[in-house]
Length: 435
Image 1 (cartoon, rainbow, N blue to C red):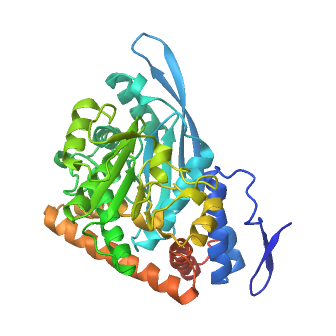
Image 2 (image 1 turned 180 degrees about the horizontal axis):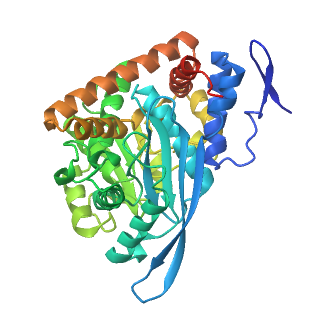
């Protein structure tokens, strides 16, 4: 059975949005949301076809000399989904779960994310199938440099600008920048963002995604007439994004009652000392053994009775199986794709206010844009300036999405997709098709 999207000049047959052959396929999930927004926008059929397909998909083999003298060959990807609004922008992740469908979905999400906050970027994503915890520093550097060399035809300040993602960091970005610069025979700071400050990184970049989550959570609470002070918050994922969001929400007066990472977590209805938890993780690498509350699993954390749930770990943690059990009033998606498309309708029925990932975690790419601008201008801003401009963009973007949601009587996720797709499609119409 198919559902037809009726457009002005033709009919496009779309997948049935009520059936998911694979609920956990991130690209299918992203496309189901895209199709819904396209239908409501009455999107031009030609533009629809363009936006449903990535521009470029590159798969590379990455031979690496290991410390023991052996050669191992890793697989890497880089996908540029859409570059109509500017250079492709998107992180590079090193993880054993990396696959092409995931990278395509993340590249598409980056396209919509940049458009939602109105940045002059397109969307991209990259990844290498590996377990960095099993690699020495030397092996990790050789892997990074060879991967960069293999995708270098795509990279450049005006074409494709990577950033850190899962299991990559400032050091990895420094290696990417240096490898590209060696090939170009000049230092090219603007080819990556998320760099160390000494190499042209931006003040405030490390905290940007978590800060953005705090800002939109505050706006959502305001929307529902709830004060920040005393609000209870559960945070799944206590890496950079989750820990920063928890710390900043605590400073605003919220009570963080549960936190977790891959080892499990803790629950304390009276409130967790976030600063102590961050210091514990800094010393021990994870939350295992942290004595700030009663032990709790990641699954249990999701279903706690709290005002705000902030999933900031990996994708597909809220599904059709656990969505009926969720009790939060607000979900702020700090991770990319934490909610499956099949779970969306359930959350709607429960009346949960969801701030979608393409808006909620856009603080990181916004400050990445600031870093790129500073690199190209050779003039660097104070952290106060960065944070002020980030707040302006995140607050305005929340307001834009909320206004569209009210206008069309849709949820925040659908409105965010509508806003993003409208902005990207407008550029395609203005530019036309080169033949």
